[in-house]
Image 1 (tube, rainbow, N blue to C red):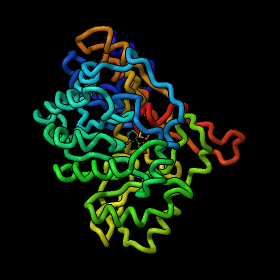
Image 2: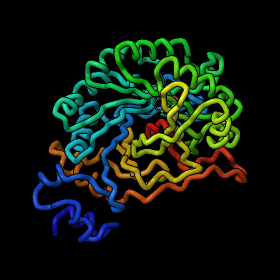
Image 3: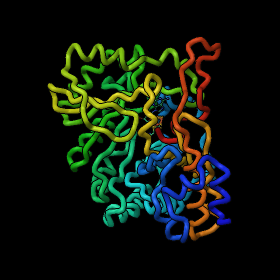
Length: 366
Ligand code: SAM
Ligand code: SF4
């Protein structure tokens, strides 16, 4: 029996289903056949955390005293490149680098510049990143030159004091200046804001106006129960439906046809021409169109943000140089991609900040 068959068939897929999707004859097929999960979803989107470190400590993401990973556990830039290249070979069209803060990883531009060869060849359609914006100004031109066209910046408030208290150390003026530089070099920016009860929920009108004035889209995210933090998540959580009801009073929000295969629903904003995205993982199931997997900076591949099941890709990456073990490991893991997540914020729990999923968002990169 073929090695891959030994791995795959005891698991979720039947032999017939598996052969329907890919051919197993030759190693080159394994390198290039598309990744399709047991629910017939093609995997075309990789989110890769390039570091667990960050220069901020956002209250919903990290605790004040985080212990970061020893360097040897983190994939080298060369290993990250091999990993991305294997995914691109198997049909991944979009890579989003995240973290921790991707732009605090030393020499991150060399990874991005190397990966841009896949953009030039046309194998990859988009290389992008999610950043807190603190370092974006100094990298903006290089990012654009490497073929990056859109960047998501996480920004929860336009109030400098609130910004400092949410991030525990960030400087709003620096982030806004970075955004200005990024826009001036031609990068398209989308803001991501986590909706926080009593913190920024009354500010969204103002943020939409700022976004309209600056040609920027805004996506609001509900807090997700990921990782131990020092605060009570019930205190932070506000359903986006509540915010949407408020926004409907002041803005003409028309459901948009725009889709990314991800959890966001989009609305066209009549008054500004920009888009508003709502990510509501706790109140809606967005899983049926899920086209993505996440890999941490230590090479753990999570098939679902809301589940603990994962596959170790670092061992096969470090085991040999020809990437076949890595490709087997990725294909095996895809057979375990679950149909959906099931996390909830339990309002009756005695330990309200106990997370549904133990790892922090900074591990899987959002
Ligand atoms: N440091 C970068 C940044 O902040 O954009 C990239 C990593 S950060 C983990 C990615 C995204 O996850 C950010 O938009 C952040 O707001 C979001 N995030 C972090 N923890 C979250 C949580 N518990 N619930 C919802 N979103 C969260
Ligand atoms: Fe850092 Fe981003 Fe997490 Fe904030 S959300 S602590 S910026 S990784």
